[in-house]
Image (cartoon, rainbow, N blue to C red):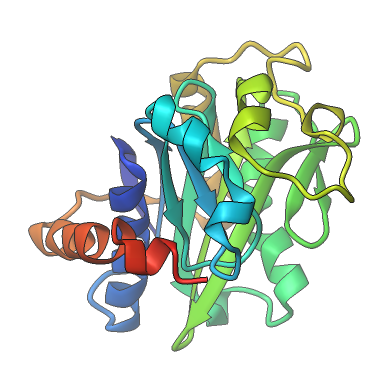
Length: 242
């Protein structure tokens, strides 16, 4: 398993890199890979099947320098707070994961769960694709599969601004307000910095998948990521497609 060091990029390039890794893994040009990153500037992402205008407060985003992007994975709308959230991403062969979708989410989440447990933070997997702490959501994940390869990525809210999240995301009337069902590590009394958190999460992934090989993003990977970022993920055709 290859590990790519932490990166900070805009939402378009972040999503472009995730898809680039998926496509190159399908072609067997890269090995199974995991990484951690943050969106800069802060960004709202929506699932592949969602409608942009009903998922995100676009006017608020425009006025407050918050990006938005559609993912190739399913799931719901997410606020990626640069100051308070880490995203993990992994591409791996389906052969290394349970066949059942639910079981695969829990298996891949194992690295996050283990990393947090090493810091005496015990979270619980809540089907289909969340982690909870004290019965509140602290992490959500999304997944897609193509040609025998899985891409799964997800959030970990360590100090996300929940009040800002409520202004950015549009939530259906059927759901309770965000602050009643979402939490962060800091809200639960764990004031952990981003560097320390990444260090422990990396260790958690290695305890699940075995010792990783520290890799470096190649020119080919970055070139494909940029092509996807600015030819696809930044385009109105992609973001407003539904």
